[in-house]
Length: 103
Image 1 (spheres, rainbow, N blue to C red):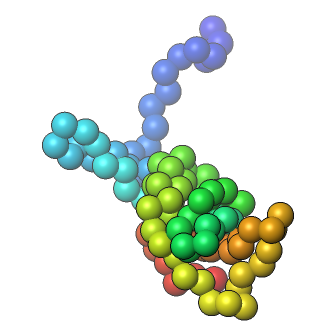
Image 2: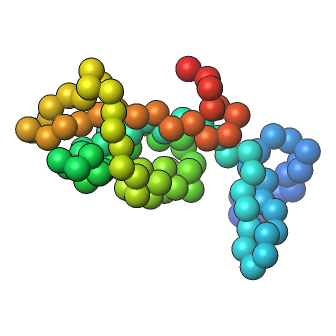
């Protein structure tokens, strides 16, 4: 008898993503990483377009990063601004979890 298609038990004490019940939904713990994003800015320094250059590997963190950056007004240092297709563009790192502060 082959083991394909059969349910295998996992070790719950091993490292991984943990899901905890919160209200009507769940919160996911142990998801961390750094998202590197490219932001295109309009003349009022609002983010017009945000693109993920390097993902965390966790879609929830990537989605939160995109929605977070699309709601902020961002005034970068002048030396960090580059012109891409005639638009001011900056590259930003967002750290989530224990990865904050790591370079």
